Amino acid sequence: MKSDILKLFRAAIGAVDPYICVKNHLAFNNNHLNDGKNGLYIEDNYVALNHNLYVAAFGKAALGINR
Image (cartoon, rainbow, N blue to C red; front, top):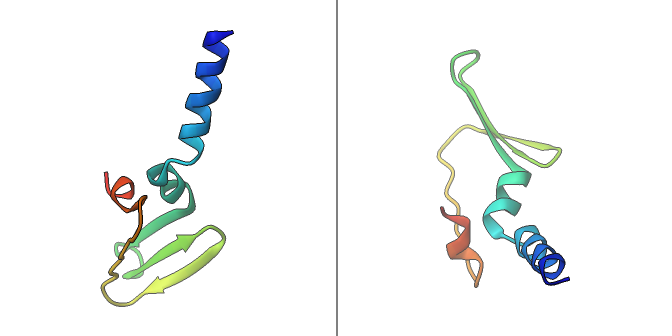
């Protein structure tokens, strides 16, 4: 029973890990070799990047995002 509780606890912590959440929902498309355009996928949405992208994070989870 103790091992089951530990498995549940680790699964719960992993589900809310800010690094994993961001990694699973954002994808950078470095496509400079084909058409010279870069982009960012945020789940099902695509954002074309024509310039630098700066990201700011605030709150308790901000440090956990940058690994």
